[in-house]
Length: 450
Image (cartoon, rainbow, N blue to C red; front, top):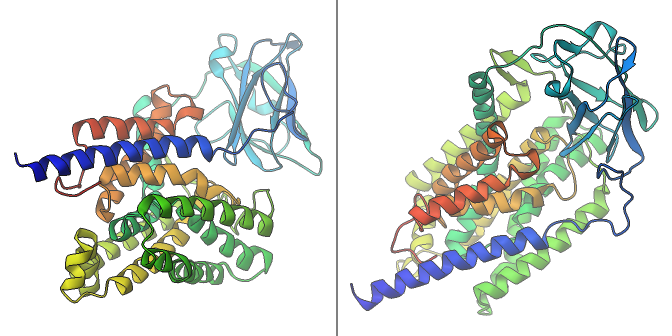
């Protein structure tokens, strides 16, 4: 083993370790600060202006100790009934939520009596104790639940697993659109772009402004978002990254600039649309049942569109002249330039493609989440880095494989007992396990640095 090989391996080991430290620091630094003096309840809920409340009774007697959860719009909370059967669940804003009664905490042989539910309220398909609830004109929604004798509807573990796998594939495909763009940027410039999350948010924000704020057709909003995503990528490279590269700034300096750019863009988007969550046209459609799998038509369109775009990207990288030039620049920019390839032109096109892919991912994420929020891209950023590292740094197809693994790990983990608050942490566990076995990532090559 020659000194060059040893140096390469040492450089790769330090690069992986450095990236792991960056991901950990990013997880800490990019968490939104908690309110300094937020009022909380005895069970740890943050008191807000919006809440669901009610009483649970059986044979006209209150039932104590029944656990209740609420989930929706990227939020979840839990509580339990007191000695008088009363409960209250606070939520951050008005929206549609799923309210669930933990049936394991109910008395034996009883279920929530569907015949005594409030008007217009029905159990979610396949359940007896989960309900979609939404606010009226006020910030308070009273939901009184009455128990009665009955048999609980249960879903087998296999059916739940199949449903979570499909959900994981859906999530993984939309994550792959953003991750492939970020992987191309890293491959051609060696820049870990911390502002890529805001490029994702930009797509959702433009679609929201055109279709919802301006009341124009949704298809026009999608076209505007895609075009503006490409323009944003072009503008970022032409106005910032190319001049900085030509000034000879190092990778760490560029990365710090990208963190500052991320913060500036994020709060600029907050200034434009505000701090609340906005829904795109047609969000939260009624799901269709395919056996144990529930998918809406938007899910089907999103998964199909993601597959088509990913296949088109694979064809572009492997079959076209420009795609081969992109791979050559990713492998060795100096050698590519000596071979007659215009490296700056290739990098510029990569930024445009990355902006387009990020914008598409932002639109799909706005329907998957659902909702457009000023910081929604930040929630995907660490998962994108995780997927890129899993697949192999700089490999677009590796980012696809890494994204699928992340999506499956996130969705299936809750079925295996991982609390929903920690489900995104399972992606980092998968990252650590794979890097211990294959430090260069799934499709990474040993001779590559980083």
